[in-house]
Length: 260
Length: 316
Image 1 (cartoon, each protein chain N blue to C red):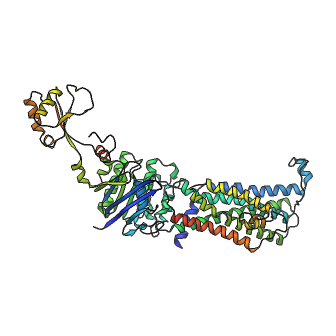
Image 2 (cartoon, rainbow over the protein chains, first blue to last red; image 1 turned 30 degrees about the horizontal axis):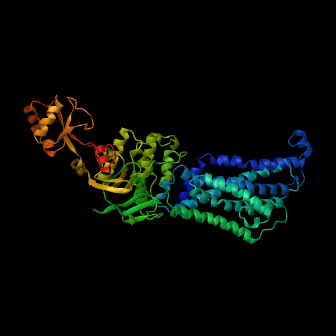
Image 3 (cartoon, chains in turn purple, brown; image 1 turned 180 degrees about the vertical axis):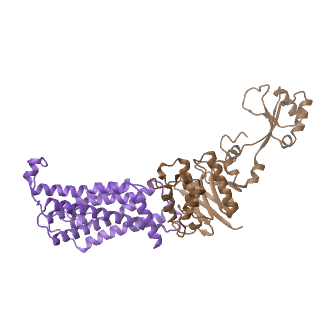
């Protein structure tokens, strides 16, 4: 346990000393800003038009400036943006050891390699959760400032739960990134594959098989395909298995593959 | 004396390419063993196999009585290492890099960091980000990481890489001090024989993945070729006189088309090397007295290249 705590300390130190957390935060802040902008427009489309925010032809059907819609939009944003951003985090945490040539320092040490790998996963989770919390808090403040309707503690609580579950599913979904970063010895393979996976998730979702594709599940859960999309336990198990496969695959790669 | 490193028929193949084969060597505790070879000879591959970073395709490696296995935690608490160019986390300071390394060695106190920084002369750079260090100081940081936990065995890949002459001397003295005062075993690779001949007790020469020769440092002197160089004012007459007296003499540059009058001649037989005075006397009597008479020992690098059969070592 001490080994894991020490390894987590090291990983946190490596992360906080780099610029990557700030860059990911700035990138992720686009989400509440974009959601808030939409709410601002929905609230008073004519005023938005007069400000030049939208063109006269803009179609605004299907949206409303209220808390339930805002929170749902937020969760959907995380189901897509989160995959990209958390993948970036996972790719950096694992891939940087290969890209910077520092992996060698972690290999012939009296701490098991699996402990180091698990510490990295812990940091990916902590980092993703912290980002989500900051971004969500920003979103709540912006929502309050805009003065969205139908706000109640119950609605915000329910929206928060959906958002937390969506984030959890997305975090599990990006665990395989660690394996790809290790096999590809850097950032390119994981990021390339995850972009492809995101495109695939969209196509598979449209075809109606999204329930069985782990990277479509968070979006479906968050309501991307509209109301009524129901997910059975199988979908959650599939996401959990994808995450587990990422962890186990990475551990096996670090302990059994040649490391040059 | 117990054995610190032992390999038996160690080999590594990558499809058609053989990086190392049939490598059997033994490093005794407390000695400095130099592992010498040209670039691409298989030194780093061997070191990675010794450190359990790559899996051998043949044979076994034992380090500090532990059979090396990929991903194992033994025996690394007692081993310090440096593989190829040392890389540090560029955004962390020198101190923080060592703190991260310390946390990978349970039980090592924080004071060890200060002590190591001082030992490697990194005091002025302790708070500098590693990314801004010069190549030489980055190498020192790599060595500091290797020494941080007071290991019994050091496995160092080209430890003098990137160091200036003063740094090379300093590291050499540090390694000697570690072996003499603390009984540390050092296994170091290098491609410069002259550099390792000053510290190593034993030298293993690897070429194209095979161990060509293992020799004691003293044997180096015996194995190097010696020759007597003679210069006179009439090289042709001197050559004639030497041949008549039974000496195996020839021009230093046998390939040159004509023999210049003051061209030096080389005598390679043991008799002339051991008794240059006899040669001088004979030349005086033959009317071509020497203007220069030197017993020359083959340069270490020349010897090394001759041993591995690379051009530049052929004509010695």
